[in-house]
Image (cartoon, rainbow over all chains, first blue to last red; front, side):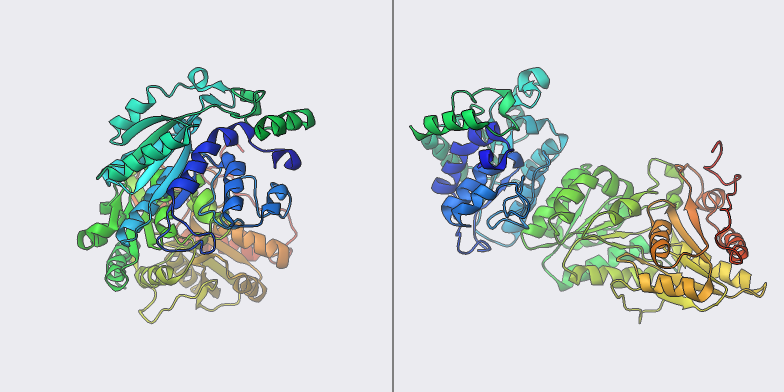
Length: 251
Length: 331
């Protein structure tokens, strides 16, 4: 997808893939044929640059034809560089500017609770993303309003554009921070789907507190030359890298 | 002397009435409900009022989420913080996503008074006008505020409405009905067009009365719907009179003066003077003193009208710049 597009966010899409698979195939209730179903679970990709992974899943679920994936980022495509609800079936809200999704998730959670709807709200955050102050405003709001119909997952891949998060702007002790803000907090291996599903189930049992699952991941997971490399945050693979990736992922 | 009402108070009261009529309406505030007047709603509809505390970016994002979830959110705080601090949140989600959020912000303009420059929003209309999908409203009086608040609740899409602190004269009666994209002519005249918004509409009327005493007939126009602008009325006013003055409690750059300049520049070049703040911040003081200092009085509008009328004879002549106007020192 990114190879054809010539650009895109490789590392952060690969680190998030297992998390998204767990969410969309194991946890969330939604209907591709009825994207406006009032009782659906809703998902916000707050780390909007992970769009390629998100689009791949939406295509697999049938929200749009698989061929559309190869138009990613092209002029006129229904698949914009960052998620755009105006263009893509299944996308709830435009995202792309980091730090803004959690507030929106809170609003959605409040609305579904007020309306008495069954749907839960799920959001995927980046770890660099929590450097944005608005995340912590929203963290306070979620706890203050006891939004137990909300689950946030953090893709803890430890890298951002300028380097390791520990070097650029350390976010540790991040689990302690979420706990201190009043969230029920768990840590999992972000590439172990059963572990993720168990954690999601645990969130359902918590009353009166929003849920945070810190998923430890590897940026660029699945392709040895991409793994753990900051270089592949926002670039597409070149032809050799593309071939190598296809070989490794095919295994 | 006509009755006076405060636009922020009329907003607050109307919101509470709407809350009783429509259970989908929810209200958010950022620790300023006593000032923005959302407290009227909050008192009665406790489970539909959400205070996010001093967190305006969160305010706009949460409002967006509530709109996504099918509610009709009214989000209020001071204009400076709503449009300044949370500009990107409004842009990226509410405007970009064309969401049904009504941002009603108080404390626009210098008449905020003693709190001073940090709290006097002089840029909010520019910041909102520049956003695609955003409707921008500046009611001039109580009845107009009530009508616009009601209209906003029924309109599906983003709305920004600016309310003020001070009590202002009532200009319309309750038969006033708001029409999107339409301005109103408050009085007719053929010599000059005075176009105002907010509290400056009253100042335009007073200026028109003063001009009339000198035999000059002014058309007074209220362009309370700043976006989408009633460009046909603007062009017609320019054609009928040949000279235009715009007046706003805002920077001349980016608000009403700019909107009118853009339309006339493209469709009907006309001698024009913009009354407003010229590239300067506000400051502490009593509202009346600040209005005088920044050249926002009826007399300033009258003087500007006389000057722009004088330019009618050769409207391609060199621009007239008053170097004594505040904000132009050193330029």
